[in-house]
Length: 577
Image (cartoon, rainbow, N blue to C red; front, side):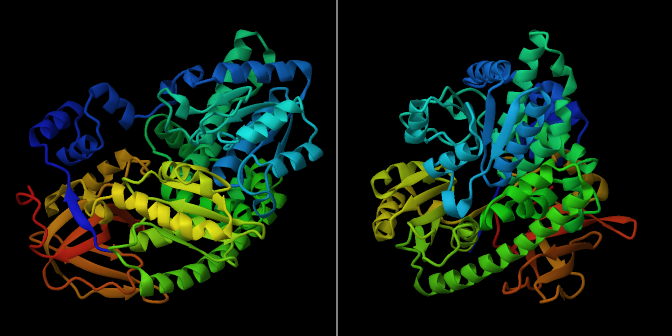
């Protein structure tokens, strides 16, 4: 995959004005402007995200109706069942609501569907099994339900009320739930995932209960749920901007001091001894919480989050770690087979969308495999496996191709579908896969330009060695937490040479460390997972993320390499400052 480097337009005068006004470096000012931040009030809230700046939860569509129905259930002593989902967002949402609503006086049970037996979302099989276990009068569907028109209509016929709390795209027509709380229906909360919505729902309930003079409202400190909010928000890859930035910033602080036995045990098996940030959540904690739900069901993950017993937590954390190792083995096997196949038959001029599947591929890992394939071939990708009855798939997309909208245009070929512009899930009869591939390719061929099919590496600025001091790089940490919608800083440094020969690292020599310099101090650069990639020659330009490396009590600047090009090939503008 060949990157096209693009550097954000330098805004010298505006940067200087912003730097002076906020007492920050011009480089940090440039990075803030690149993220669309220029108004002083907005910038102040971005650089200092605080819980007091969270908006009124009743501004979310249909929140008031959901609160009314839930409070009625509490008053009537009705049994409420929380029907969740098996990914990290669904599990953290279910844990947060089970814990807080139980403490506030609801009769509450929870149910998570089995991936292989019941499939994704609010399925009829899942609801029937849920109600056999928990004969509830009210069902709260969390992280699912926005397209479950027939299932919710069937439940209403049986006299069961349904409240939906979800952030996925809503079907047309929308399901006739008692309340459909979904930011996609309008307003300023579209970045929230389901655990963020769960946090807002409890906030709304607490506000209403205080207004009603209910004493139980004083028994719950919602800040204790911020660790769960951070976990689900980061793992679900929603933008870390707006409300999410506030929740994740406060949540990571809570996570690092968490007293939950489950999270303490999970951090232990993940070997997280230092401060956990968005990286550790996304790549160490999140995959372990996801693993059980990917392979079978997510009960172990939910029990881990809810337990107050340290011994049980340690056992569950070890089981999740083992599940994650099995998941990695299954994923690696499928990826090796599939990428070998695609390298032989992929045609960049004809294949605008990749659609592949085999009956023996495990449906719990096809989404991760789709992500891996997209990284290598940079095409919207759908991968199918089979659950015996039909083929179930997961897709990932690129900028410019709304996958959820494309699937709506293929609804006649699909049994079920739903998701976002960049990620979606679906079910299909095996005989329809070829037609789906053809139709999606026709759509993408008319929607995507040749330029859009070349991955871009968007860089914040060109820099000189004088801007890569420890103090400057530490200041860039004010952009944390980074992630979707607020990417880590990416910079270009041109005309470099090796100060020492490159050095291979890792058990399989899959990483490379080299020291670079250009008219200043030598800096260390590390290129992770570059086993088959050619190394830079005598003179080269480097694209990287600056980081602070801590070793033996010493802090130093380290460059995390993203890409390199021969010197002189990259000419986006004037030389760096």
